[in-house]
Length: 619
View: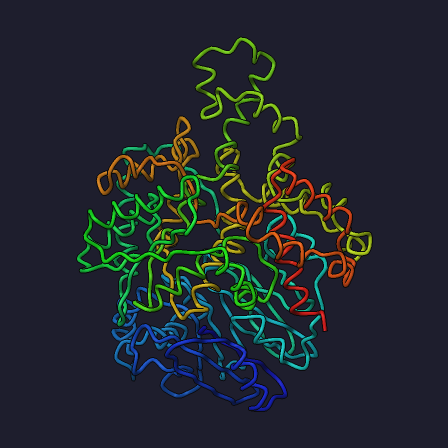
Protein backbone atom coordinates (compact mmCIF):
# COMPACT_ATOMS: atom_id res chain seq x y z
CA UNK A 1 0.00 0.00 0.00
CA UNK A 2 1.26 3.47 -0.70
CA UNK A 3 0.74 6.28 1.75
CA UNK A 4 2.23 9.09 3.76
CA UNK A 5 3.35 9.45 7.34
CA UNK A 6 5.26 11.93 9.43
CA UNK A 7 5.54 13.70 12.75
CA UNK A 8 6.75 16.86 14.45
CA UNK A 9 8.85 17.44 17.53
CA UNK A 10 11.51 15.17 19.00
CA UNK A 11 12.21 12.28 16.68
CA UNK A 12 14.79 9.98 15.22
CA UNK A 13 15.18 8.20 11.93
CA UNK A 14 14.46 4.80 13.44
CA UNK A 15 10.99 5.94 14.55
CA UNK A 16 10.31 7.44 11.13
CA UNK A 17 11.44 4.18 9.53
CA UNK A 18 9.12 2.13 11.78
CA UNK A 19 6.17 4.36 10.92
CA UNK A 20 6.90 4.24 7.21
CA UNK A 21 7.41 0.49 7.25
CA UNK A 22 3.99 0.13 8.89
CA UNK A 23 2.48 1.28 5.58
CA UNK A 24 2.08 -2.14 4.00
CA UNK A 25 2.86 -2.31 0.31
CA UNK A 26 3.03 -5.05 -2.29
CA UNK A 27 4.56 -4.45 -5.68
CA UNK A 28 6.83 -1.72 -7.06
CA UNK A 29 7.17 1.46 -5.06
CA UNK A 30 9.48 4.32 -4.24
CA UNK A 31 10.34 5.18 -0.66
CA UNK A 32 11.28 8.72 0.35
CA UNK A 33 12.34 10.21 3.68
CA UNK A 34 13.13 13.72 4.82
CA UNK A 35 13.97 15.28 8.16
CA UNK A 36 14.54 18.90 8.97
CA UNK A 37 13.39 21.85 11.02
CA UNK A 38 11.60 19.67 13.56
CA UNK A 39 9.47 17.88 10.97
CA UNK A 40 9.84 14.39 9.49
CA UNK A 41 8.11 13.14 6.36
CA UNK A 42 8.02 9.69 4.78
CA UNK A 43 6.35 8.22 1.73
CA UNK A 44 5.74 4.80 0.24
CA UNK A 45 4.80 5.50 -3.35
CA UNK A 46 2.81 3.49 -5.86
CA UNK A 47 4.19 4.99 -9.09
CA UNK A 48 1.42 5.93 -11.51
CA UNK A 49 2.45 9.31 -12.97
CA UNK A 50 6.05 10.32 -13.85
CA UNK A 51 7.46 6.94 -12.84
CA UNK A 52 11.10 8.04 -12.84
CA UNK A 53 10.88 11.64 -11.68
CA UNK A 54 8.00 11.65 -9.20
CA UNK A 55 9.83 10.52 -6.05
CA UNK A 56 8.67 12.16 -2.84
CA UNK A 57 9.11 14.35 -0.83
CA UNK A 58 9.08 17.08 -3.47
CA UNK A 59 10.38 20.63 -2.84
CA UNK A 60 9.99 24.08 -4.34
CA UNK A 61 12.97 25.83 -5.96
CA UNK A 62 14.62 27.06 -2.74
CA UNK A 63 13.76 24.02 -0.63
CA UNK A 64 11.57 25.89 1.85
CA UNK A 65 8.41 23.94 1.02
CA UNK A 66 8.22 20.14 1.11
CA UNK A 67 5.24 17.95 0.28
CA UNK A 68 4.27 14.30 0.37
CA UNK A 69 0.88 13.15 -0.80
CA UNK A 70 -1.16 10.05 -1.50
CA UNK A 71 -3.46 10.10 -4.52
CA UNK A 72 -3.62 11.68 -7.95
CA UNK A 73 -4.17 15.21 -9.27
CA UNK A 74 -5.95 14.62 -12.55
CA UNK A 75 -5.70 18.18 -13.87
CA UNK A 76 -1.99 18.55 -13.12
CA UNK A 77 -0.94 19.23 -16.76
CA UNK A 78 -3.26 22.24 -16.96
CA UNK A 79 -2.11 23.50 -13.56
CA UNK A 80 1.55 23.08 -14.50
CA UNK A 81 1.05 25.15 -17.65
CA UNK A 82 -0.77 27.84 -15.68
CA UNK A 83 1.99 28.01 -13.05
CA UNK A 84 4.79 28.04 -15.62
CA UNK A 85 3.19 31.08 -17.24
CA UNK A 86 3.37 32.75 -13.84
CA UNK A 87 7.13 32.10 -13.65
CA UNK A 88 7.38 28.86 -11.68
CA UNK A 89 10.20 26.50 -12.65
CA UNK A 90 9.71 22.74 -12.52
CA UNK A 91 12.48 20.15 -12.19
CA UNK A 92 10.33 17.12 -13.13
CA UNK A 93 8.83 16.37 -16.49
CA UNK A 94 5.21 15.87 -15.43
CA UNK A 95 4.96 14.98 -11.75
CA UNK A 96 1.60 15.88 -10.25
CA UNK A 97 3.23 16.12 -6.80
CA UNK A 98 5.50 18.98 -7.86
CA UNK A 99 2.46 20.94 -9.00
CA UNK A 100 1.31 21.04 -5.36
CA UNK A 101 4.30 22.97 -3.98
CA UNK A 102 4.12 25.59 -6.73
CA UNK A 103 0.34 25.91 -6.49
CA UNK A 104 0.73 26.49 -2.76
CA UNK A 105 3.40 29.13 -3.40
CA UNK A 106 1.13 30.90 -5.89
CA UNK A 107 -2.29 30.62 -4.26
CA UNK A 108 -1.60 29.98 -0.59
CA UNK A 109 -4.05 27.83 1.34
CA UNK A 110 -6.64 28.28 -1.41
CA UNK A 111 -4.55 26.14 -3.77
CA UNK A 112 -6.77 23.18 -2.81
CA UNK A 113 -9.65 24.67 -4.79
CA UNK A 114 -7.52 24.39 -7.93
CA UNK A 115 -7.18 20.63 -7.59
CA UNK A 116 -9.31 18.03 -9.33
CA UNK A 117 -8.29 14.76 -7.80
CA UNK A 118 -8.20 12.42 -4.84
CA UNK A 119 -5.59 13.19 -2.23
CA UNK A 120 -4.24 13.24 1.28
CA UNK A 121 -1.62 16.00 1.40
CA UNK A 122 1.06 16.87 3.97
CA UNK A 123 2.90 20.12 3.22
CA UNK A 124 5.63 21.68 5.35
CA UNK A 125 6.12 25.43 4.98
CA UNK A 126 9.58 26.18 6.41
CA UNK A 127 9.21 29.92 6.04
CA UNK A 128 6.05 30.01 8.17
CA UNK A 129 7.10 26.98 10.22
CA UNK A 130 3.80 25.20 9.92
CA UNK A 131 2.49 21.87 8.77
CA UNK A 132 -0.54 21.82 6.43
CA UNK A 133 -2.64 18.64 6.10
CA UNK A 134 -5.62 18.29 3.76
CA UNK A 135 -8.00 15.61 2.52
CA UNK A 136 -9.85 15.61 -0.82
CA UNK A 137 -13.43 16.82 -1.15
CA UNK A 138 -15.15 13.43 -1.07
CA UNK A 139 -12.80 11.60 1.28
CA UNK A 140 -11.49 9.15 -1.30
CA UNK A 141 -8.05 9.06 0.33
CA UNK A 142 -7.71 8.62 4.12
CA UNK A 143 -5.68 10.77 6.51
CA UNK A 144 -5.30 9.97 10.22
CA UNK A 145 -3.51 11.96 12.90
CA UNK A 146 -2.69 11.94 16.59
CA UNK A 147 -1.91 15.02 18.68
CA UNK A 148 -0.20 14.24 21.97
CA UNK A 149 2.42 15.85 24.21
CA UNK A 150 2.62 18.86 21.89
CA UNK A 151 3.54 16.73 18.88
CA UNK A 152 1.50 15.84 15.80
CA UNK A 153 1.85 12.49 14.04
CA UNK A 154 -0.06 11.74 10.83
CA UNK A 155 -0.40 8.89 8.35
CA UNK A 156 -2.51 7.31 5.66
CA UNK A 157 -3.13 4.32 7.92
CA UNK A 158 -3.71 3.73 11.61
CA UNK A 159 -1.05 1.02 11.67
CA UNK A 160 1.54 3.64 10.80
CA UNK A 161 0.68 5.69 13.90
CA UNK A 162 0.60 2.88 16.46
CA UNK A 163 4.43 2.51 16.61
CA UNK A 164 4.75 6.13 17.82
CA UNK A 165 5.55 6.20 21.58
CA UNK A 166 2.98 8.97 22.21
CA UNK A 167 0.15 6.92 20.65
CA UNK A 168 -1.60 4.41 22.91
CA UNK A 169 -3.30 1.27 21.65
CA UNK A 170 -6.50 2.01 23.59
CA UNK A 171 -10.01 1.29 22.25
CA UNK A 172 -12.32 4.21 21.57
CA UNK A 173 -15.51 2.73 22.97
CA UNK A 174 -17.69 5.67 21.87
CA UNK A 175 -16.61 5.14 18.26
CA UNK A 176 -17.04 1.37 18.56
CA UNK A 177 -20.61 1.93 19.76
CA UNK A 178 -21.49 3.37 16.33
CA UNK A 179 -19.79 0.48 14.52
CA UNK A 180 -22.64 -1.84 15.47
CA UNK A 181 -25.06 0.39 13.55
CA UNK A 182 -22.98 1.61 10.61
CA UNK A 183 -20.71 -1.47 10.08
CA UNK A 184 -17.74 0.93 10.22
CA UNK A 185 -16.21 3.62 12.41
CA UNK A 186 -17.57 7.05 11.36
CA UNK A 187 -15.28 10.05 10.95
CA UNK A 188 -13.83 11.96 12.70
CA UNK A 189 -13.31 9.05 15.10
CA UNK A 190 -11.12 5.99 14.76
CA UNK A 191 -11.31 2.79 16.77
CA UNK A 192 -8.47 4.08 18.98
CA UNK A 193 -8.38 6.81 21.59
CA UNK A 194 -6.19 9.68 20.51
CA UNK A 195 -6.27 8.84 16.78
CA UNK A 196 -8.66 10.81 14.59
CA UNK A 197 -9.19 11.19 10.88
CA UNK A 198 -9.71 14.31 8.84
CA UNK A 199 -13.15 14.42 7.28
CA UNK A 200 -13.79 14.86 3.55
CA UNK A 201 -12.88 18.39 2.49
CA UNK A 202 -11.14 19.12 5.80
CA UNK A 203 -7.72 20.65 6.45
CA UNK A 204 -5.54 20.91 9.53
CA UNK A 205 -2.83 23.49 10.18
CA UNK A 206 -0.29 22.81 12.92
CA UNK A 207 1.91 25.73 13.96
CA UNK A 208 3.76 26.00 17.24
CA UNK A 209 1.66 23.92 19.59
CA UNK A 210 -1.81 24.63 18.22
CA UNK A 211 -4.10 22.83 15.81
CA UNK A 212 -6.49 24.68 13.51
CA UNK A 213 -9.07 22.42 11.83
CA UNK A 214 -11.54 23.71 9.26
CA UNK A 215 -13.40 22.62 6.13
CA UNK A 216 -12.02 24.02 2.89
CA UNK A 217 -14.94 22.40 0.98
CA UNK A 218 -18.35 21.15 2.08
CA UNK A 219 -20.92 19.02 0.30
CA UNK A 220 -24.20 20.93 0.13
CA UNK A 221 -27.59 20.27 -1.42
CA UNK A 222 -28.63 23.29 -3.48
CA UNK A 223 -31.57 22.42 -5.73
CA UNK A 224 -32.20 24.66 -8.72
CA UNK A 225 -35.94 24.70 -9.40
CA UNK A 226 -35.57 26.15 -12.90
CA UNK A 227 -33.49 23.26 -14.28
CA UNK A 228 -35.36 20.77 -16.46
CA UNK A 229 -34.61 17.07 -16.91
CA UNK A 230 -33.92 17.70 -20.60
CA UNK A 231 -31.20 20.16 -19.58
CA UNK A 232 -29.82 18.12 -16.70
CA UNK A 233 -29.28 14.77 -18.45
CA UNK A 234 -26.92 15.98 -21.22
CA UNK A 235 -24.96 18.06 -18.71
CA UNK A 236 -24.48 14.98 -16.53
CA UNK A 237 -23.25 13.14 -19.61
CA UNK A 238 -20.75 15.88 -20.47
CA UNK A 239 -19.41 16.03 -16.90
CA UNK A 240 -19.10 12.26 -16.63
CA UNK A 241 -17.38 12.00 -19.98
CA UNK A 242 -14.81 14.63 -19.05
CA UNK A 243 -14.29 12.98 -15.67
CA UNK A 244 -13.56 9.64 -17.33
CA UNK A 245 -11.18 11.37 -19.76
CA UNK A 246 -9.19 12.89 -16.90
CA UNK A 247 -9.05 9.62 -14.97
CA UNK A 248 -7.59 7.80 -17.95
CA UNK A 249 -4.40 9.84 -17.56
CA UNK A 250 -1.66 7.48 -16.39
CA UNK A 251 1.80 6.29 -17.32
CA UNK A 252 0.84 2.68 -16.56
CA UNK A 253 -1.79 0.27 -17.94
CA UNK A 254 -5.31 0.81 -16.65
CA UNK A 255 -8.59 -1.08 -16.66
CA UNK A 256 -12.02 -1.01 -15.04
CA UNK A 257 -14.30 -2.85 -12.65
CA UNK A 258 -17.33 -4.22 -14.49
CA UNK A 259 -20.21 -5.60 -12.42
CA UNK A 260 -22.80 -5.45 -15.20
CA UNK A 261 -24.69 -2.60 -13.52
CA UNK A 262 -25.38 0.76 -15.10
CA UNK A 263 -22.64 2.62 -13.18
CA UNK A 264 -19.56 0.56 -13.99
CA UNK A 265 -20.92 -0.26 -17.45
CA UNK A 266 -21.29 3.45 -18.28
CA UNK A 267 -17.69 4.08 -17.25
CA UNK A 268 -16.44 1.22 -19.43
CA UNK A 269 -18.54 2.45 -22.36
CA UNK A 270 -17.13 5.97 -22.09
CA UNK A 271 -13.57 4.69 -21.76
CA UNK A 272 -14.01 2.84 -25.05
CA UNK A 273 -15.67 5.79 -26.77
CA UNK A 274 -12.87 8.10 -25.60
CA UNK A 275 -10.33 6.01 -27.45
CA UNK A 276 -9.05 3.51 -24.90
CA UNK A 277 -7.98 0.38 -26.78
CA UNK A 278 -8.24 -3.16 -25.47
CA UNK A 279 -9.71 -2.03 -22.18
CA UNK A 280 -9.24 -4.67 -19.52
CA UNK A 281 -12.36 -5.26 -17.43
CA UNK A 282 -12.79 -7.34 -14.29
CA UNK A 283 -15.78 -9.06 -12.68
CA UNK A 284 -16.34 -11.15 -9.57
CA UNK A 285 -18.31 -14.40 -9.84
CA UNK A 286 -18.99 -17.22 -7.39
CA UNK A 287 -18.43 -20.96 -7.30
CA UNK A 288 -21.97 -21.47 -5.96
CA UNK A 289 -25.19 -20.48 -7.71
CA UNK A 290 -26.87 -17.54 -6.00
CA UNK A 291 -30.02 -15.69 -6.91
CA UNK A 292 -29.24 -12.76 -9.25
CA UNK A 293 -25.47 -13.32 -9.11
CA UNK A 294 -25.55 -15.29 -12.35
CA UNK A 295 -27.15 -12.21 -13.93
CA UNK A 296 -24.18 -10.09 -12.80
CA UNK A 297 -21.90 -12.33 -14.80
CA UNK A 298 -24.13 -12.32 -17.87
CA UNK A 299 -24.59 -8.54 -17.97
CA UNK A 300 -20.89 -7.89 -17.44
CA UNK A 301 -20.09 -10.23 -20.33
CA UNK A 302 -22.71 -8.50 -22.48
CA UNK A 303 -21.14 -5.07 -21.94
CA UNK A 304 -17.67 -6.52 -22.49
CA UNK A 305 -18.78 -7.99 -25.83
CA UNK A 306 -20.38 -4.72 -26.96
CA UNK A 307 -17.23 -2.71 -26.33
CA UNK A 308 -14.67 -5.40 -27.11
CA UNK A 309 -12.96 -5.36 -23.74
CA UNK A 310 -10.41 -7.90 -22.57
CA UNK A 311 -12.57 -9.41 -19.83
CA UNK A 312 -11.40 -11.34 -16.77
CA UNK A 313 -13.32 -13.05 -13.98
CA UNK A 314 -12.37 -14.10 -10.48
CA UNK A 315 -14.32 -17.08 -9.16
CA UNK A 316 -14.72 -16.59 -5.42
CA UNK A 317 -15.18 -19.41 -2.93
CA UNK A 318 -16.38 -19.30 0.69
CA UNK A 319 -13.06 -20.80 1.78
CA UNK A 320 -11.15 -17.94 0.18
CA UNK A 321 -13.28 -15.46 2.12
CA UNK A 322 -12.68 -17.28 5.39
CA UNK A 323 -8.91 -17.51 4.87
CA UNK A 324 -8.66 -13.84 3.86
CA UNK A 325 -10.17 -12.40 7.04
CA UNK A 326 -6.80 -11.62 8.71
CA UNK A 327 -5.60 -9.78 5.59
CA UNK A 328 -8.87 -7.85 5.29
CA UNK A 329 -8.72 -6.78 8.93
CA UNK A 330 -5.08 -5.79 8.50
CA UNK A 331 -6.08 -3.52 5.63
CA UNK A 332 -8.59 -1.64 7.80
CA UNK A 333 -6.92 -1.64 11.26
CA UNK A 334 -10.48 -1.26 12.58
CA UNK A 335 -13.59 -3.45 12.78
CA UNK A 336 -15.38 -3.36 9.44
CA UNK A 337 -18.31 -5.47 8.25
CA UNK A 338 -19.18 -3.73 5.01
CA UNK A 339 -18.37 -5.03 1.54
CA UNK A 340 -15.06 -6.85 1.15
CA UNK A 341 -15.51 -8.08 -2.45
CA UNK A 342 -12.96 -5.53 -3.69
CA UNK A 343 -10.17 -7.41 -1.92
CA UNK A 344 -10.61 -10.54 -4.01
CA UNK A 345 -11.27 -8.92 -7.36
CA UNK A 346 -8.36 -6.51 -6.98
CA UNK A 347 -6.00 -9.42 -6.44
CA UNK A 348 -6.86 -10.39 -10.00
CA UNK A 349 -6.64 -6.82 -11.28
CA UNK A 350 -3.14 -6.43 -9.81
CA UNK A 351 -1.85 -9.12 -12.17
CA UNK A 352 -2.85 -7.04 -15.20
CA UNK A 353 -3.00 -3.30 -14.43
CA UNK A 354 -2.08 -0.79 -11.70
CA UNK A 355 -5.06 1.57 -12.17
CA UNK A 356 -8.75 0.71 -12.42
CA UNK A 357 -11.76 2.98 -12.93
CA UNK A 358 -14.93 2.19 -11.00
CA UNK A 359 -18.60 3.14 -10.78
CA UNK A 360 -18.46 4.08 -7.08
CA UNK A 361 -20.47 7.08 -5.94
CA UNK A 362 -23.36 6.97 -8.42
CA UNK A 363 -25.72 5.32 -5.92
CA UNK A 364 -25.11 7.98 -3.29
CA UNK A 365 -25.46 10.87 -5.75
CA UNK A 366 -28.50 9.73 -7.75
CA UNK A 367 -30.42 7.38 -5.46
CA UNK A 368 -30.51 3.60 -5.30
CA UNK A 369 -30.44 2.15 -1.77
CA UNK A 370 -33.51 1.20 0.26
CA UNK A 371 -33.35 4.40 2.30
CA UNK A 372 -33.37 6.36 -0.98
CA UNK A 373 -36.25 4.41 -2.48
CA UNK A 374 -38.32 4.88 0.66
CA UNK A 375 -37.67 8.59 1.20
CA UNK A 376 -40.30 10.15 -1.09
CA UNK A 377 -42.95 7.41 -0.74
CA UNK A 378 -42.81 7.69 3.07
CA UNK A 379 -43.11 11.46 2.80
CA UNK A 380 -46.17 11.06 0.56
CA UNK A 381 -47.58 8.31 2.75
CA UNK A 382 -48.12 10.78 5.61
CA UNK A 383 -50.75 12.63 3.56
CA UNK A 384 -52.52 9.42 2.55
CA UNK A 385 -52.28 7.32 5.70
CA UNK A 386 -55.85 8.10 6.77
CA UNK A 387 -57.47 6.67 3.63
CA UNK A 388 -55.34 3.67 2.61
CA UNK A 389 -58.43 1.52 2.01
CA UNK A 390 -59.67 3.72 -0.80
CA UNK A 391 -56.61 4.95 -2.68
CA UNK A 392 -57.00 5.73 -6.36
CA UNK A 393 -54.61 4.36 -8.97
CA UNK A 394 -53.00 7.81 -9.23
CA UNK A 395 -52.45 7.93 -5.48
CA UNK A 396 -50.89 4.48 -5.47
CA UNK A 397 -48.54 5.69 -8.20
CA UNK A 398 -47.70 8.55 -5.85
CA UNK A 399 -46.20 5.90 -3.55
CA UNK A 400 -44.19 4.10 -6.25
CA UNK A 401 -42.55 1.64 -6.10
CA UNK A 402 -44.49 0.71 -2.96
CA UNK A 403 -48.04 1.40 -4.17
CA UNK A 404 -48.90 -2.29 -3.76
CA UNK A 405 -46.97 -2.69 -0.48
CA UNK A 406 -48.96 -0.42 1.80
CA UNK A 407 -48.51 -2.53 4.93
CA UNK A 408 -44.73 -2.41 4.43
CA UNK A 409 -44.86 1.38 4.21
CA UNK A 410 -47.16 1.58 7.21
CA UNK A 411 -44.76 -0.52 9.29
CA UNK A 412 -41.81 1.76 8.58
CA UNK A 413 -43.87 4.94 8.89
CA UNK A 414 -44.98 3.92 12.39
CA UNK A 415 -41.37 3.79 13.59
CA UNK A 416 -41.43 7.51 14.33
CA UNK A 417 -39.97 10.66 12.83
CA UNK A 418 -38.05 10.88 9.58
CA UNK A 419 -34.71 10.35 11.33
CA UNK A 420 -36.08 7.60 13.58
CA UNK A 421 -37.29 5.76 10.51
CA UNK A 422 -33.87 6.20 8.91
CA UNK A 423 -32.12 4.97 12.05
CA UNK A 424 -34.32 1.86 12.01
CA UNK A 425 -32.80 0.84 8.67
CA UNK A 426 -29.30 0.52 10.12
CA UNK A 427 -27.99 -2.77 11.49
CA UNK A 428 -28.82 -2.03 15.12
CA UNK A 429 -30.76 0.91 16.53
CA UNK A 430 -29.82 2.47 19.85
CA UNK A 431 -32.66 0.49 21.43
CA UNK A 432 -31.41 -2.78 19.93
CA UNK A 433 -27.85 -2.05 21.03
CA UNK A 434 -29.10 -1.65 24.59
CA UNK A 435 -29.94 -5.37 24.52
CA UNK A 436 -26.81 -6.41 22.57
CA UNK A 437 -24.08 -4.47 24.37
CA UNK A 438 -23.15 -5.17 27.97
CA UNK A 439 -23.63 -2.63 30.76
CA UNK A 440 -19.84 -2.28 30.77
CA UNK A 441 -19.76 -1.36 27.07
CA UNK A 442 -22.68 1.05 27.37
CA UNK A 443 -20.94 2.81 30.24
CA UNK A 444 -17.66 3.02 28.33
CA UNK A 445 -19.51 4.49 25.31
CA UNK A 446 -20.39 7.47 27.55
CA UNK A 447 -23.87 8.21 26.30
CA UNK A 448 -23.22 8.01 22.57
CA UNK A 449 -26.38 7.91 20.42
CA UNK A 450 -26.37 6.85 16.78
CA UNK A 451 -29.89 8.22 16.46
CA UNK A 452 -28.74 11.67 17.54
CA UNK A 453 -25.83 11.49 15.11
CA UNK A 454 -28.23 10.76 12.23
CA UNK A 455 -30.60 13.48 13.42
CA UNK A 456 -27.71 15.97 13.31
CA UNK A 457 -26.88 15.00 9.73
CA UNK A 458 -30.46 15.53 8.61
CA UNK A 459 -30.47 18.92 10.33
CA UNK A 460 -27.30 19.79 8.44
CA UNK A 461 -28.75 18.77 5.07
CA UNK A 462 -30.19 22.23 4.39
CA UNK A 463 -33.04 20.97 2.20
CA UNK A 464 -36.62 19.82 2.68
CA UNK A 465 -36.46 17.42 -0.28
CA UNK A 466 -36.94 13.93 1.27
CA UNK A 467 -34.67 12.07 -1.14
CA UNK A 468 -31.93 14.67 -1.08
CA UNK A 469 -31.96 14.60 2.71
CA UNK A 470 -31.40 10.84 2.62
CA UNK A 471 -28.66 11.23 0.00
CA UNK A 472 -26.96 13.96 2.02
CA UNK A 473 -26.74 11.60 5.00
CA UNK A 474 -25.07 8.92 2.89
CA UNK A 475 -22.63 11.29 1.16
CA UNK A 476 -21.52 12.45 4.61
CA UNK A 477 -21.24 9.01 6.24
CA UNK A 478 -21.75 5.84 4.20
CA UNK A 479 -19.80 7.02 1.15
CA UNK A 480 -16.53 8.17 2.77
CA UNK A 481 -16.55 5.99 5.87
CA UNK A 482 -17.62 2.70 4.30
CA UNK A 483 -17.80 2.62 0.49
CA UNK A 484 -14.67 4.63 -0.27
CA UNK A 485 -12.94 3.12 2.74
CA UNK A 486 -13.30 -0.45 1.51
CA UNK A 487 -12.43 0.54 -2.06
CA UNK A 488 -9.23 2.31 -1.01
CA UNK A 489 -8.03 -0.07 1.72
CA UNK A 490 -8.75 -3.31 -0.11
CA UNK A 491 -7.42 -2.18 -3.49
CA UNK A 492 -4.27 -0.58 -2.13
CA UNK A 493 -3.60 -3.79 -0.20
CA UNK A 494 -2.80 -5.15 -3.67
CA UNK A 495 -1.10 -1.95 -4.90
CA UNK A 496 -3.93 -1.05 -7.28
CA UNK A 497 -5.21 2.51 -7.52
CA UNK A 498 -8.98 2.90 -8.01
CA UNK A 499 -10.35 6.05 -9.64
CA UNK A 500 -14.11 6.81 -9.35
CA UNK A 501 -15.25 9.15 -12.18
CA UNK A 502 -18.66 9.76 -10.60
CA UNK A 503 -16.93 11.56 -7.73
CA UNK A 504 -15.41 14.34 -9.80
CA UNK A 505 -16.38 17.36 -7.69
CA UNK A 506 -18.01 19.09 -10.69
CA UNK A 507 -20.39 16.16 -11.18
CA UNK A 508 -20.98 15.92 -7.42
CA UNK A 509 -21.91 19.59 -7.16
CA UNK A 510 -24.20 19.37 -10.18
CA UNK A 511 -25.97 16.29 -8.83
CA UNK A 512 -26.51 18.16 -5.56
CA UNK A 513 -28.30 20.91 -7.51
CA UNK A 514 -30.97 18.51 -8.82
CA UNK A 515 -34.29 17.81 -7.08
CA UNK A 516 -34.95 14.34 -5.74
CA UNK A 517 -37.83 13.81 -8.17
CA UNK A 518 -35.32 13.81 -11.01
CA UNK A 519 -33.12 11.19 -9.36
CA UNK A 520 -35.81 8.64 -8.48
CA UNK A 521 -38.83 9.18 -10.71
CA UNK A 522 -41.96 7.01 -10.54
CA UNK A 523 -39.94 4.41 -8.67
CA UNK A 524 -37.12 4.34 -11.26
CA UNK A 525 -33.74 4.56 -9.51
CA UNK A 526 -31.11 6.98 -10.81
CA UNK A 527 -33.57 8.16 -13.43
CA UNK A 528 -31.75 11.25 -14.70
CA UNK A 529 -28.42 9.43 -14.76
CA UNK A 530 -29.96 6.61 -16.80
CA UNK A 531 -31.35 9.18 -19.21
CA UNK A 532 -27.85 10.65 -19.53
CA UNK A 533 -26.24 7.34 -20.53
CA UNK A 534 -29.12 5.51 -22.23
CA UNK A 535 -27.46 5.56 -25.65
CA UNK A 536 -24.36 3.83 -24.30
CA UNK A 537 -25.97 0.60 -23.11
CA UNK A 538 -28.79 -1.82 -23.93
CA UNK A 539 -32.11 -1.14 -22.20
CA UNK A 540 -31.89 -4.34 -20.14
CA UNK A 541 -28.60 -3.13 -18.64
CA UNK A 542 -29.92 0.39 -18.03
CA UNK A 543 -32.98 -0.80 -16.14
CA UNK A 544 -31.80 -4.01 -14.50
CA UNK A 545 -32.58 -4.25 -10.76
CA UNK A 546 -29.96 -3.03 -8.32
CA UNK A 547 -27.95 -5.94 -6.89
CA UNK A 548 -24.82 -4.36 -5.50
CA UNK A 549 -21.21 -5.51 -5.33
CA UNK A 550 -21.67 -7.68 -2.24
CA UNK A 551 -20.74 -11.11 -1.00
CA UNK A 552 -23.45 -13.80 -0.62
CA UNK A 553 -22.43 -13.97 3.02
CA UNK A 554 -25.87 -14.88 4.41
CA UNK A 555 -25.92 -18.19 2.55
CA UNK A 556 -22.33 -19.05 3.46
CA UNK A 557 -22.86 -18.26 7.15
CA UNK A 558 -25.82 -20.64 7.22
CA UNK A 559 -23.80 -23.55 5.90
CA UNK A 560 -20.14 -23.59 4.97
CA UNK A 561 -18.93 -20.96 7.46
CA UNK A 562 -21.02 -22.10 10.41
CA UNK A 563 -18.11 -23.73 12.27
CA UNK A 564 -16.07 -20.54 11.92
CA UNK A 565 -18.97 -18.45 13.20
CA UNK A 566 -19.53 -20.61 16.25
CA UNK A 567 -15.81 -20.62 17.04
CA UNK A 568 -15.31 -16.87 16.70
CA UNK A 569 -18.50 -16.04 18.61
CA UNK A 570 -18.02 -18.71 21.24
CA UNK A 571 -18.76 -17.84 24.85
CA UNK A 572 -15.14 -17.90 26.00
CA UNK A 573 -14.01 -15.42 23.36
CA UNK A 574 -16.94 -13.09 24.03
CA UNK A 575 -16.23 -13.13 27.75
CA UNK A 576 -12.61 -12.15 27.13
CA UNK A 577 -13.72 -8.54 26.77
CA UNK A 578 -17.21 -8.54 28.25
CA UNK A 579 -18.50 -5.92 25.80
CA UNK A 580 -21.36 -8.01 24.38
CA UNK A 581 -24.18 -9.80 26.16
CA UNK A 582 -23.40 -13.48 25.63
CA UNK A 583 -27.05 -14.55 25.79
CA UNK A 584 -28.02 -11.93 23.20
CA UNK A 585 -25.39 -13.28 20.78
CA UNK A 586 -26.54 -16.86 21.44
CA UNK A 587 -30.12 -15.85 20.65
CA UNK A 588 -29.06 -14.25 17.36
CA UNK A 589 -27.22 -17.43 16.32
CA UNK A 590 -30.05 -19.71 17.40
CA UNK A 591 -32.67 -17.72 15.48
CA UNK A 592 -30.47 -17.58 12.38
CA UNK A 593 -29.64 -21.29 12.27
CA UNK A 594 -33.20 -22.36 13.09
CA UNK A 595 -34.54 -20.30 10.19
CA UNK A 596 -36.61 -18.10 12.50
CA UNK A 597 -34.83 -14.98 11.25
CA UNK A 598 -32.09 -13.89 8.85
CA UNK A 599 -29.36 -12.35 10.97
CA UNK A 600 -26.56 -12.80 8.42
CA UNK A 601 -25.47 -9.15 8.36
CA UNK A 602 -25.54 -8.93 12.15
CA UNK A 603 -23.53 -12.11 12.58
CA UNK A 604 -20.94 -10.86 10.08
CA UNK A 605 -20.81 -7.58 12.02
CA UNK A 606 -20.20 -9.38 15.32
CA UNK A 607 -17.62 -11.71 13.78
CA UNK A 608 -15.56 -8.91 12.31
CA UNK A 609 -15.63 -7.06 15.62
CA UNK A 610 -14.50 -10.12 17.56
CA UNK A 611 -11.73 -10.96 15.09
CA UNK A 612 -10.46 -7.37 15.20
CA UNK A 613 -10.53 -7.34 19.00
CA UNK A 614 -8.65 -10.64 19.20
CA UNK A 615 -6.04 -9.32 16.78
CA UNK A 616 -5.46 -6.03 18.58
CA UNK A 617 -6.08 -6.66 22.27
CA UNK A 618 -6.17 -10.38 23.11
CA UNK A 619 -2.55 -10.81 24.20
